[in-house]
Image (tube, rainbow, N blue to C red; front, side, top):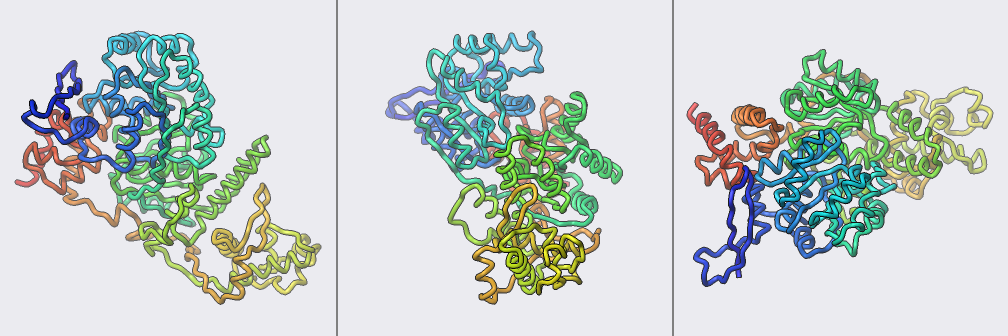
Amino acid sequence: MCYIITRTQRKGFWDVQFYKRDERNVHARLTMSPSQTILKKFFGFDSFRKGQEETIQHILSGRDVLCVMPTGSGKSLCYQIPAMLMEGVTIVLSPLISLMKDQVDALRQNGVRAAAINSAMEWDDVKPVFRQIRAGETKLLYIAPERLEGVGFREFLAEIDVSMVVVDEAHCVSHWGHDFRPSYLNISPTVASLPNRPVVAAFTATATHEVRADIVAQLDLADPHTLITGFDRENLFFQVEHPLDKTGFLLDYLKKFPNMPGIVYCSTRKAVEEVCSDLRAFGVQAVRYHAGLDDEERRTNQESFLYDRATVMVATNAFGMGIDKSNVRFVIHYNMPSSIDSYYQEAGRAGRDSAPADCILMFGRKDVVTARYLISQSDDSSAREASFKKLRAMIDYVNTSGCLRYFILRYFGEEGLDDACEDCGNCSSVIERTDVTVEAQKILSCVYRMAEKTGGRTFGQTVLTDVLRGSGRSAVKSLGFDRISTWGLMKSYSAEAVRRITDFLMAEGFLDVDDGEFPTLRLTGKARAFFKSGTRLLMRKYEEKPDRKPKKGVTSIARKEVVNEDLFEILRELRRKLAAGEGVPPYVVFSDKTLFAICEALPENDRALLDINGVGQVKLEKYGDAFLEAVRNWRSS
């Protein structure tokens, strides 16, 4: 048996129907499955990525799924393709209006019948959507989980044929997650109220073991097929910087990539205002986003960024969840987030098209003070304790000399990793290192002597630094620390230098931390072994004064040059004009990765263009002539 695929264009979209026929009556044998055919014809890809086909098959078999796949790995296709093959409509629960719009725009560009209902729509805009769904003219309906709070909407769902309910950003249903949304708790009761239970598919990019278990329980998934493809984003280049002049570092970076869109995250509204103002003063097309702005400015600024009218978005973490802009080439954190969960979620907004992108974290000691203060404001003692532990992991990340990528992956539970990825700021040897073996011995010895002097008490970094630098403070003298052998051993070092080496020793596991608002330190078994081993310790070298000279070769984008860069800019401008004519973001027309591929392949005809990933039949018919002409003109110039 094989499948014959017939298509009839209808109101600008394609209907896909599959008919089983005896092979003897078929002149052309088709080797692709229905899922593979849709993948190529509608989405322009020749093959599935890791985990996609497996997830699709389980959904089509009628089984619930929980899928944990990194951002940019194609989670959306895992439910969009089954939705096109299943009878009835698929309901996609999505957390933000902007995400719904992006997804629907992209699907409609590909010829897929999709719609959204959100709180910003007037009733006159909603009524046609209901009519299309009842008439079977919509395959995917995107809604916010808050919509399920309305009795009328739940009754509407009970009247139609719902084949699947998709929960996007599923970690929002978990109290253990970093983006918990109470409205997600309405999903399970709504599914249970439907006349025929649909398949329930939950998708998220980052979820620890506790979060995954909570998702299954809260959504009442029935014996779900759980797929975890890993958390690695191979196209992302991770880097940590400790600049004394953060603004100077940021400006130097942006000078090197003046046309590349990116996000700069700040921890406070005040920092957003200051950084955005500084960038504009130097001619950067920057816009701002935080909760203190009125709705209209947030909407306008977000659209300017999505439509490439502004190249840099400076924002708090209020911006980004659900933003599907695929051509973000960098995410720079101006301040350190309070957890690796939040950091990886935010950094993961770079490179969603799988092309190279940079994730750079600029760390300053004040970031830790700010984070501890915000955590301490919580009234929930257990939540505070958990948050302080997450903060400790984040602090260890910015101070480690090991592989940054594998540090993150181990945090999320991946095992069997090598020592180095060879493609992050630490592994690629773009940072200078200095021998701190002697300094480490002095610090660890001091921790031991302080505990010995006080009968085993532990103390924090402030007291430790004071003792090592020979402070005469009353707090030091009252404990007798001015009379121990390690008092004043590092009096020639600045307080900042002592703290940095201590942070490094914590990150490398030589010092254990009793976390809390005022954390204290104690030696580990690794520290005791270190005294006997004679091992040399190398730590990154930090600048002691601002260095405004641009650094070379430290980023993924800089190390992976675009083939035919002038053609790439021509195609970017063509993409922008076509998108403006259709009222959609440029990346919806073609992703950066597809443009890179066109620049490399230099296609001369429809067949060659169709062979490029991201170019499907629908987009070939809409945009093929324009892009082929641009390539021909570039060749002849």
